[in-house]
Length: 297
Image (cartoon, rainbow, N blue to C red):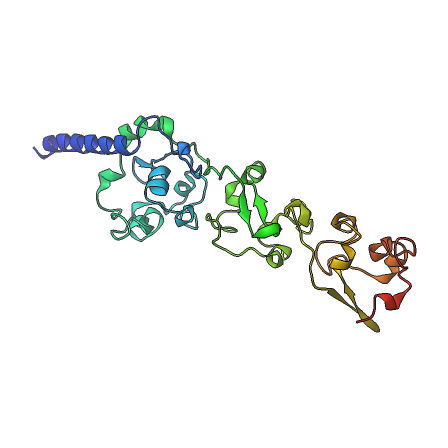
């Protein structure tokens, strides 16, 4: 008698689950159609139980969760990558991992309650098979460039350009959070090989010292650059003085890197027309042999 009664109960539960999913995820709709373009496709999980339809649109747009709420250690950006791990289980959810980080009964309903709100069953999974993301597909990047920095030195970062070469997971979320403005990006860190500098090192991509490749306008330092010299007075190089006569591209980066001390400047190469000697040759400007003209600090 118990088995006979369980059949209509399961059928009713399935009907309610499908009705709920039809309201939240209308057939033919896909999260890729969202306005901000930060997500792609619903995801049907067949582990640890069949089947859960996860909607980026519901979580990101309707609930207002930022991408880094999940993609900052809980889930990798590539779809279904969590299912490859042995601990992607209901038991892990109960311990606060994966979905359980929010579905804990406080932030959202607990993962061990209201099962039909997530689990659509096999029939539910088939109903939305055409709208789900393919395995390995990551989130859609923002369509337009992201402005990093302020004023003339701001960089317009293009996801479109970078995702033609790299996968999302190569930058997010170990290197960069999924939300703009969550971390400070400085040239000092980049020059140490971190952040953008991990690729822009002259090997994987052009070196970070090629400032004009990213910074459309690079204002010259207003204060003098001091260079120490053994046995002689220091040299103070003035950008305001030189930019009255020369364009930035005449020195950077064919003669000097866009980083103080990065070019390994020495006097002997200058005598042969390198570094400062390219102009300080007695023709374009006074010769480098006029030591006191520069070594006066």
